[in-house]
Image (cartoon, rainbow, N blue to C red; front, side, top):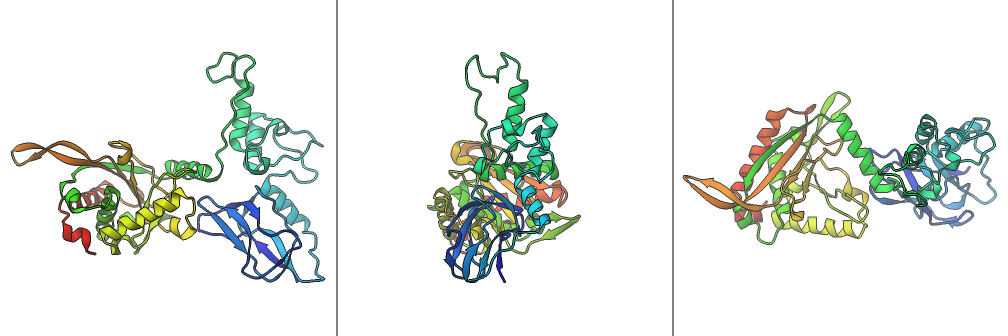
Length: 394
């Protein structure tokens, strides 16, 4: 019987994927384990392999289409086998998943019966209905012409914007095109909105004298130095590497540190796994490799998953201090500012020292301010007493 090809769940937070392209065409002979399509997730582009050898048939998802995990997207058949038409309920579910109206149902968002189908997610259709936007009159900017939430809101704003409004186009000028939050940018928007909405943040700030760290780091970056100190401090503070899950606190034994990086498609957080087992030179080299792979957009899923704590350093951009939103499901994130000469009290004297401002955000459901303060104290002590032996040995 035909073997279904389903959209796999590549990581625990994945709910859907976007079909990027089919690597093999309908009717092609494929071998088990052979990549047959590429799927865009919130983090990276992944290949889906053929679950069996045979002929690719019954492709049900086109490029640009968003598909829920575990949905059948094609079949592998043997010579002489045919793919049966999907049951009515499966057809309805698939249509709903990609935003197409079901047969006999009125089109949402003010579309009239008989109007052409519009590709839009159910949530986008509901929003269009609430805002009185006719989806058939909205140009979709998403993959495959899908109408996005940004498209609907832009259409609603254009319809209600008064003449002369600062955001409205001038007479005869075309309306500004909305920038759809798709792909990684959309994933960042959803994840950060979730963080701000669901996580009660506590922010703790402390200055640290980086004199010892600057002398001991050799050719390593300050980012690597901070990751080194964080990984060691995390050993004694399990709640800083935990997460809140269904009313309980789950602690990870592993110390995997995400390092926030800028990439062509937006923020990405590659992960240094078992960072506490690496010395400073190894940490620096590993972070450099991840940064290069992020710039080249070739990171793999294992390289961007599993972090139990995140470090975000904007010091190289001249930023002295900032606060970050925690990356769910983690319970903490450290924001690192620029290392600058500042007045520092040493004994009875005021001298210039390389000083950095650190801001720790913690999830108040997992720990409280005192727990975060103890971790920040231990972290700063490690940075202020760091020696060459520490930097070069595990």
